[in-house]
Length: 323
Image (cartoon, rainbow, N blue to C red; front, side, top):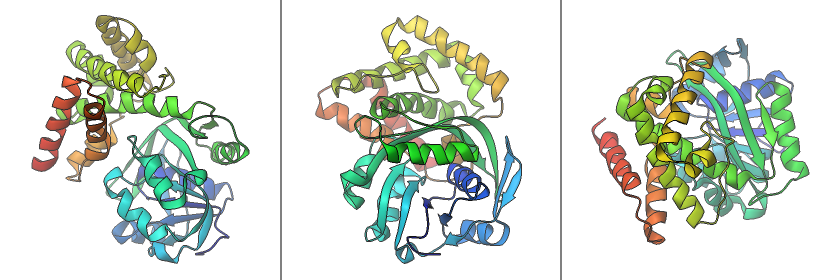
């Protein structure tokens, strides 16, 4: 099934890629998973096995040689950020109608543009969570929102087609007109949550609810907000954390708002753990350079003093080395 007859090619068969792929395939969409090694073998032999918010097994074709993909209507990228360049390189010759990345960080769109041309790239983000277990099963823990939109903004039929297909399949997705703002808001949330997850090493609601952890997180989110403002991007509250509001008010008010989010998450998703914490505890490489590192380097280029971001970037690098 290595050709243009593939509607959705999904690069990355971790938790999110598996959740999206399994739901689309179950809904009758043409899906091809691009995976390798043990994960590819699991999918070939057992299909995609979803547990938690949804309980089903779904057979899906898997392609282990990305150079064999001639084309796809839509390419969805869900790999870890540190492997993006190497993963995209074999696909540069594929006839991709549109490409979008649900990865963390802010480098992803430019990397897709370098591979396929800016006109084929859409913005995307995921405020949806899961965990790939050692058994090959995927624990689906949060079904909040995926967003798709034109860059830097605006509506389009192709964004609506992609979002509509995924949403109809059972993973909540919307086409949005302000994707750049939402991507920055997602990153501001993710940066703070990522750092707290690998330092406290516990479920997300616990450090959100703690007053000192909430204060540190608020300060880091506000620093990323300063960077977004310097880049000419208006933030949004439509993220895991209400980023725009956290940046507008006082630091103390921001910390209290984060604690309130913690109480809500304890009720809605008490088992939620950041994917970064999952990687750390499994001994896998952390997403550092393309996320915190990119932001720290961009701030330095703009001559912005963001001391907590710089310190957290250094700490995350250290944790990554000694994990």
